[in-house]
Image (tube, rainbow, N blue to C red; front, side):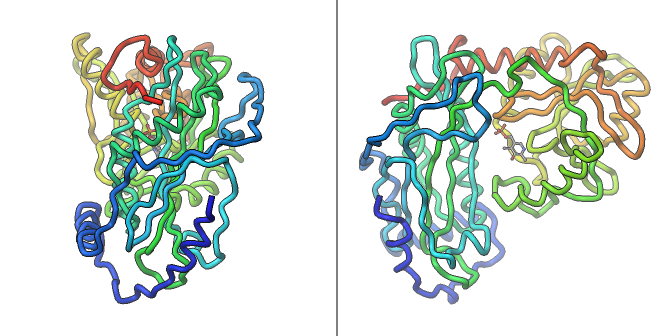
Length: 411
Ligand SMILES: *Cc1c(COP(=O)(O)O)cnc(C)c1O
């Protein structure tokens, strides 16, 4: 690979004159589009893919020994973008280090966004993605928010499909195993000037992963966190920007020092429940008057990451639980509401939802010296809905149930 740095290092033209207004995704799209039409930027073109295969294939740990995100496949997909040319030809090259000038803007101002998605092997040995259109749309929203370029979603899905197929042999074909894909976009312009990057790199690396809970569910304990805030209205907590994650580690260590695996992020004086660690949060509460069960999660008000798993859990619940008499709600709810429901025996279960684990059952939440028990008996590791959701989702992801969410890739 001709180093992205060597070519982009040349592109250090000053862009101080193009200070951006306060930018939101929609407006941003048009800013970039105007730039595109002015300079005839090339769109992302999957048909131009060039593949250079490795001459030194790796061997991986046994599937049962895989640790999340530690081992990577033999290749990476890379696509450079420059302001004058647009998207250059996509390349699959042997997995390798990047070489970046120390002044590259990603290192100073965090021009970085990413996605997390998985490729699954079905019974016929075909490689499937799960709702890739959702990841493409979300990555475009994240990148637009930090003045990085956007791309044609179907072209990138096609490239990811080709990449996943090239790495097919590294996908263990047991249930629960998959190839974790990490699409990443960084600003690569060499400048300490604070402005829109004139060059970028979009790349994808892949890591074979095993089930999040290899020996079955293990319910987690949370610490309700109000002294640190993960996301706020008008902020960027609803985008998958790398800059959102590093600040959450110290609160996580704080929680861990008191014996809790994750933070339950609260927001505002009302102490609204937002997310759990890097997962969306769901609770099952029984109505005080009617006893009707309600599956509740926070609404997408700008403080909540638009999880693909969250959206899928909601859709499956509306399709399959509502006919059983359930209520499904996207609404604000407070930690006090969970505490009261627990006291009155109405908190049935709670779980986090995200691509890595699908669902992660919650045993208890520590809040202001009080312990909220989330409906599990001591001998139980999961509630009924978390378990049913996991089964429903896996059936679709592994192609055991034909569903429009499962995307069969082409080599
Ligand atoms: C990625 C992420 C999620 C889960 O999103 P999925 O698309 O379901 O994997 C939830 N919350 C945060 C903060 C995240 O970064």
